Length: 280
Image (cartoon, rainbow, N blue to C red; front, side):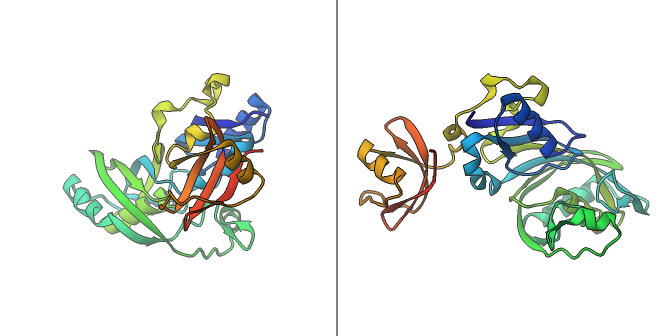
């Protein structure tokens, strides 16, 4: 089995799972992504292979950076160009109006996911219920917008750079922006540029993937601090034992090493190291 991480540049027009299937077939191993991109969206998709899939939770919570192209004057039921136009209005504003309003988007806010999303409602995907004409009631969740910058303004087309917390729906942000501007808006193109410390610059397209593009699992967990164990300590942790480490005071998750060999992730609390996600 191949264990590792691939930084994929997903093209638009395919789902995230279709991109993962390409990776599975190429490397003949189990694989999973760490954060869905809509079919219309392209960009950085982190794919974990083999035993590295055990660490998916650590990637899901990372902040994201997106570049989005939006069209003002039209609102759609899916909040993007693949949906049905439900409202048209004139665009009577200038670029300064947009810049001014974007400032109010910064910070924590409650956001309701689009009804045409992969969120589950009673065990069913929301978009499937919406397509069947059923009422979909999705709960609001807290998100954080760290950056909202107007990059291009060629009205009615605009381009915005968003830096957001995990779980933020860019389609919803654009719909909210359009309504706040009084003219409506929807996404026409979306590209994910960054996930946590990882950039699209280090990603490869599915049709260009090769064995050399597989990163070691611990390379992708570089945002976690490192903790080196002796051979005896490592064997104890691998057998499920807790370790008392009086010299370590900061609680949290750590990458664990036996000398230079990565063995997994542990959790340190009250100077006690607990096994959490370990490689076999």
